[in-house]
Image 1 (cartoon, rainbow, N blue to C red):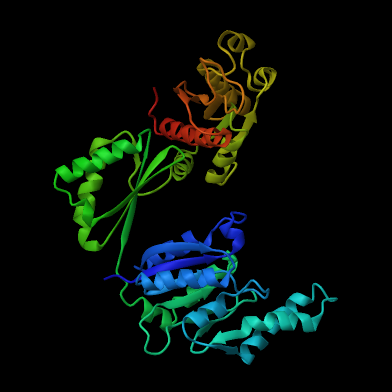
Image 2 (tube, rainbow, N blue to C red; image 1 turned 180 degrees about the horizontal axis):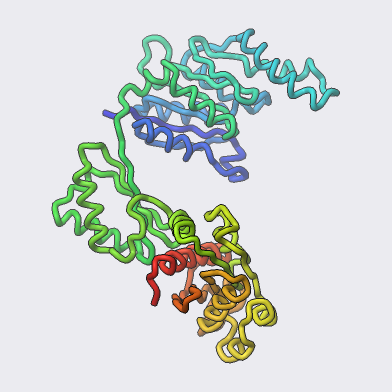
Length: 430
């Protein structure tokens, strides 16, 4: 049986949503890479009993390893190390050598604030040098050391790895932790896992569910694969995890997805549409620009981020008023008057205007109603018109009704536009 692990993310600020949890997902992926099955992630506040309850539940569920993040600072609410030591039956004691190493770090930091009370800082940080008996110390990246705390002698419970909360400290400390003998002993049952992602666009999750049903009918044992689907930014991600001996099963499943959805399957190796557009721009040395009144410049920003260079993305025009559309993007006033600002005709004029204004090879036009107010019966909130034009006269134009809030509509609009750009760069024009 594969080694199994649970994660305990501590911090009332994370529990209440004031701070987003970045450590849980990051640790889960690192554990997967090591061949450790991640079973549970628990978020708890800075309350000792809640931390104990989380540790106890994971231990009762048969975890071989528990990884905690947070609660290692000098303040009163930072209690993770003490709670873990108590839970493992290993009383804590002051490690004077560690205290000296922590103080050396603090002395460098105190040069920025020379008026601080040195004695008070020593007292408040001394707790960071309290180490459970028999634990392995992970040297501080900031001021807080980490710990690897095995179960007490004669116990068959899990080993607990205690890491700091700030990702900039946790991540480099993890690299040290996984090399420690106590860590390797805890995950001795690790196995090799392979993971692949298929990405599809323009398809509901229900179609993937039907494809999985067809795979079972064709004799593909999907129960031997761990398949998860996720709808994100209008794309369906199908992630499959499996052990090497199930490679033929995965190949059969992936082949059936490709056979049933050849147009919608745009990535068989997990590469994102952003990565593919960036690669196509570089390979072809073509340039792109945008003119739009929907995403507030998000599309131009996302294009710039993915291309990584102004050599390919020459700029973007954000033109919400009709006058700006005409003056800056060259949209004829008569077209706006005849069809309305949110129309495929205006989107096409915006795409052509981006090419003319910035001299690019590809122009992208978007105009839409992101809400929350506005909209009509014919053009409700969420109506977005897209057009991608090429200098040689090629074009892709779409009108869609996108669901969600203003942010959702804008965010999904950038994804739709990137897929249209990808098709245009690949020569798949209407």
